Length: 571
Image: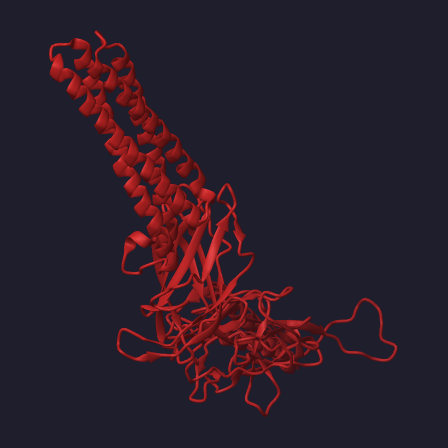
């Protein structure tokens, strides 16, 4: 009989209570993992020993194994707090000692811009270059930028919009030609109406009885008026139909001929009216003469209307060359364009430049795009602006047929609203490929430009994939690095070293590194911490059990002591 078994039980149970106490003490430690005391029995070994009657000599502590199960994740108010949801460890270093691995994501930024834990160890990952491109490779301490971001001049502009197909042409040259065409068509229509009235008057005059010298003279005048009206009608019709394809000289000559013919028709009708008045003077009560005069009066009115319209056509034809040679848009006159929209671009200093685009329908499925920058004409001169692009749509308005790709233009130097001189911006690529022309209201659905002003660092955000983004006062966001995490084939082989950290060991194997979310690596949650996975209730129950076991081992020692005392007392 021996005290060995009881003593080993007391020692083992004492160690178990220490493990339980440590678990309870770290129940509120972020990233802490619960430990479990694992025991093994002990037997004495002897040469030639064997058989089934061997009695053990107690127990010993075989291992204290940590359980790397996922702890609960709770949100915090610190955006630098990080939690790993899934497998993996943060890698931190002091630059001297071997890398420490931790599940505690209580990080902050030090004065040099490094992300550090409460022990001053720096979080490791991949750096980013000046353009925000992550540079994967050997992990190093992540250092956040402390300065601002330089301005970037605008180089690309994209517009997505619909131009209303129902709108009319507003291009002055096209409007002038349309006006000349429509006035010619109206002259032809009026001349035709005049001819109809002249024919009606001649028919009425032919029916006059009795025939007298005065009525015969009137009939001759009526016939001449009808012939003149016929000539005016055919001449006006020729001028109207030929205008679209005629040169300016031919169009001018045709309009002049139509006006001359219209004037002749009006004069002939008035002469006929005088002749019928003379016939009525000798026979004022003759109903047929009265009817003929009434018809001729109508012909005179319509001939004069055609004559006046012919003069309008002559003026419209004469005005067309001036409209074509002059400015095709007046930015101060909304009648010279259909719609407009504005956006802000940036020069090399990061100064804002207000750009306004004007959309002018130039013809069927054709639109001119003009632009001003700080009210300065972008292409051409202020006196004679030129389009920066001309859009040609497909017949159904769904596709821009021309231009086939972005168009390039330059923005000249100008003066902004505050009176500051802005720099010129060259080589801007304007992409209008997503424009449509449907029969619905004008609307810009998306606009993009890649320029921005200088900005100061305002905040840091960490994405689930570990990318650390720096946010600036100009609205820009740029990656400043990416966190690398590590996992092990046997996490229980890691060596606890305190401060919520572990060190790799032979038993853990080499770390397998990568970015969060890759393979079997977990993802990050910013503004959150992983709680300890200690179950307080379970630990208290374990403590009660360990206490009972300790008492039982103490009782076994007491029993052995009593047995030995009995032996000593034998006489």
